[in-house]
Length: 584
Ligand SMILES: Nc1ncnc2c1ncn2[C@@H]1O[C@H](COP(=O)(O)OP(=O)(O)OP(=O)(O)O)[C@@H](O)[C@H]1O
Image (tube, rainbow, N blue to C red):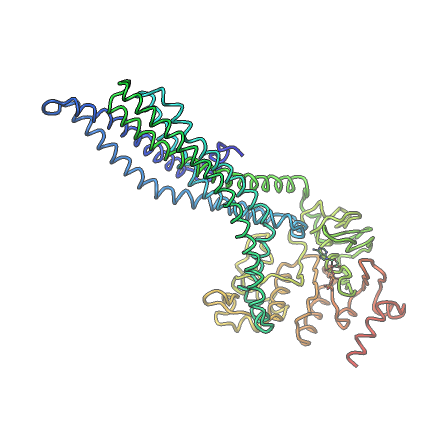
């Protein structure tokens, strides 16, 4: 990524504040160089002066004073504008990442490379920040260098090449360090993510109890330390390597400055330059050397951070491409009348065997179907494929005869997965979000009706601020619910959505017996007007379904009503009898 592209990116994100910062940087950069050039003329005028200073000298003095004031003003205004620019650039980058994770395909979340990319992309806001710091500095320093070059060229042009060369070793070293830091940061992303995971679980309310009961705080902290120490060790090696290069660069700078100052002394001794010119060149060269070091340090930072930013832009382009070519969805072909699953085979990216193999069945739009099977048999995977969340390697799911992946199901599908969301919203909004695809419904009656159906109205109405109570113990004024109560809220969310396909993955796992019985009388009422697909290990729940599918190692091995499957005496009958015996 070229510097020019970075500048364009920062300009796009920063808008007017970028141009404001640029203007102040130009003013201060050119102002400093102009002060030096005018100061030299002023000094020359004063040394030639034999009486009271003339008008032209007073004007020159006024110009120098004015320039110094303008530079000081520019620096102060630039500081404020720079802060604004920084915030805008960070906001822009964060927005892109938020949109990017919000719209990525579900399968991306199962690939480590995607998470690496997200972490690297999140760093891009820091990179953008560093770039917004470095770019104006490079511009300002370059302008000052330009002014100083003019000053040297006017006074002793023969010394100009040496003066320019004196900055080169530092510049090359700065760039090399930037390259190495970039490679280091990229290589370390997986380990950084592992460390971040430990930080997250140590800070999480959900895991706090288990961590304390098991007493694994120190174990986790040690693991965290180990990962961080590895990082520090690698950076130490990197800095050691850099120190060697820095010594070589410093010797180069000293050598070129020595050549320059000796040459200057020689020119002065031979009378090729006067004392004032020699002082001007000497001071200019020292400032020039200092400014090229500023440029070098910032060019190094630019190399590192523009590399990260380039990666960020590549990530966005990749996801743009995915959005453009992956799923081109037209509106769903109306409420579900028939769902056909045709020879579906699906494998997760890192898996060594398919999670589903050659699964075929059909579901009518008024049917309640249950899926049973041992842990890991593929039930949740199948439910996600039925919702069109994954692309199967072979076979397909058809919604009213059309491939589901070619349609946008809109509000027609509602699901409660095992890891359902607990939003830090009010109780009402936690339910309302179920129909957020359309206009947000302000009518609380509909929210309460859904909550009643899900057996959630009783406890939600009794909260400190009723349905307006915030469901987040982590936020001021918020409260938490029990796991079973949360599950009822998640079910209410689906009922509020009123879809034509309801998918419930272990909906009764945390419900008490009474709530479970009521949920199933609700579901029984619902079937007939919509399709209901329930995954459950509770056979008391399962037996009321119109049809039961039995999955085993990703294959559909049996299907039929409870009575048919019991008569068959196969896998289902075995699992049912085992559970019944446990209750007896
Ligand atoms: N992201 C993933 N990457 C690789 N393999 C996965 C992934 N998710 C699930 N699997 C594997 O796919 C298989 C099916 O998993 P799935 O979650 O569908 O099972 P399940 O029948 O719903 O299990 P449970 O009853 O425990 O909820 C399992 O062998 C599991 O290990």
